[in-house]
Image (tube, rainbow, N blue to C red):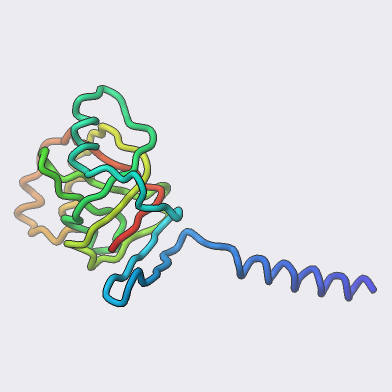
Length: 165
């Protein structure tokens, strides 16, 4: 009897775990020609602000923006793992997007696509060591990497979820 209950419990647990969503990438076809991919927490496109608006809000604030959803064109992606991306904007340097707790990555070939991302926008100081690592990830030459000698204060974004289309 106990053995039967144990087998049933294990089978039920397996069935439930197979149906749970994960923070890994999922995709769906919005129509035949548009592929939409989700990474991290599942988010929607609703109420996403243009990245220029978020950058302006952050530049005009001395604090962070705790929760915001933005959209923009992907300018660059980490070529090693897809562990960061930059979003082009008309306000200055591209905004660097990292992913909460290093919990998910985006495709390494998503340059030029549109991203919708939700999370925290903040001011950040990037060390010389980290700037050199980013340059290396971006495929820069040794000479370009060695020219990086000063830390940067920049606007950053830690995403909890990303949509790429």
